[in-house]
Image (tube, rainbow, N blue to C red; front, side, top):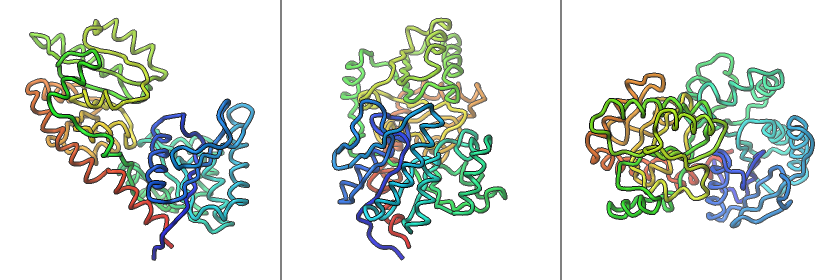
Length: 386
């Protein structure tokens, strides 16, 4: 049985203006629900300088003050969240926790007292997912034991993690539901061919085939290895291919990537653009979206690129295996197999119309399977389940 839900609480340890993948998805879902007339309240930490309460386009954000080093900060937020949920249980009908960190424990425990439905979204790809990370510490293992006992519903974003958890005896007590991230296919839209040329020009680029990465510059993304393969393509092809690579984002690998660009002689074909608030101009200028990660959940950036009609070149891990149909909307490769990676690259170099046709199919997949409108419909039904 299901009933309409008119109020939802989003619980997230970090939230806008912090914008990682989880934070961005939490904000987009909150706005989509508010657009349906659902009262959405976000409960999060209060970093320095941000107000305790703020309205973000119909989404009420409440920030709880915390203090101390990271471990203390997290514990304080968990305890405060627990008591807030108890004291304000009349203000929401369901709780949606973004990521299975310590606040999820507070939400699940409070739900046992209040009877409110509690969902916990898992983040990360296989090996860097929250379940795996939790297994490496005593507190993490205690959290997992509590989840097995309390049995909250866990939303899993890709088949890889879902199948692992479902078939593992160690996690047989967990309640799992396959789900996915959504993308605003009304905002992220493709351009006509001549408009795409103008989009490249606006970024200071010529009409070369544009490969684009958007995301955190961290080791699991394997961008340094991708740059090495990119350099090999330039040394092996004669004449040199007319292609550009733009990397958008910041993170711990930024300095190493700058050195690699210089050492490999790639300054003429690779641009490190740094973090950008508005990604739409980059998606619209791109021909191929690149995601060479060793592990991945379901990349928001990949979905946004697909919605903009961009072909995908991604490693065969995580959500890309469900979102990308090889040969139709993109190309998948083993992240540890450089020959496969370069074969994907060469496929796009041989005929630029390949990326155009694949981009059209990528857009179709984004609209039919990952549109935020559809994801919101399904979430509202889940919230209302008895």
